[in-house]
Length: 140
Ligand code: ATP
Image (cartoon, rainbow, N blue to C red; front, side, top):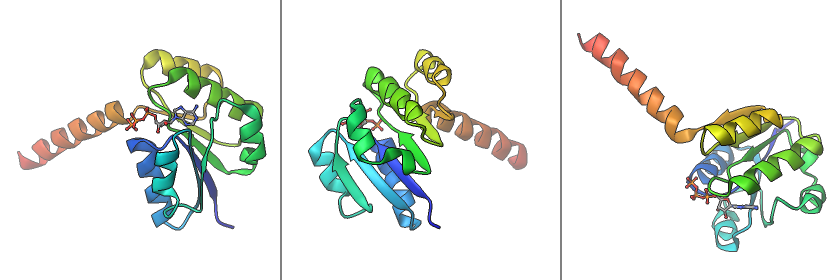
């Protein structure tokens, strides 16, 4: 059976995740509070909805607990990111990946049980630096 993903927050990071998953043929539910952003994704993913994910009822009604993996890509609004993650956890979502804005945010996310926490800019910076080092070693 195909894996089902839900992506909350359709900024550059969440949007890129949505596009890649959809290109790979995955079932994707895209969610954002901003209607314009949701419209951008309506032809790309299986389903795109306008919703405020800090509202537990909204997430319940979307059947969020039945998704295999939920990605929380709300960046700037740390409060909304934490509350959304907490609700997902309480609803029993199997796997939750969250984008962290800073170390304090990460600490709280780990405490409430996010399964995987990513810092896209920091992680990519590390990867690129390591690539540069290994390229230099090879060049040498
Ligand atoms: P990126 O660094 O990925 O480009 P961004 O700056 O484009 O991020 P952010 O403001 O970090 O976007 O947030 C990502 C998305 O999360 C936005 O499109 C925003 O509308 C959405 N968002 C914020 N709060 C909520 C919420 N409570 N429920 C659903 N979506 C939300």
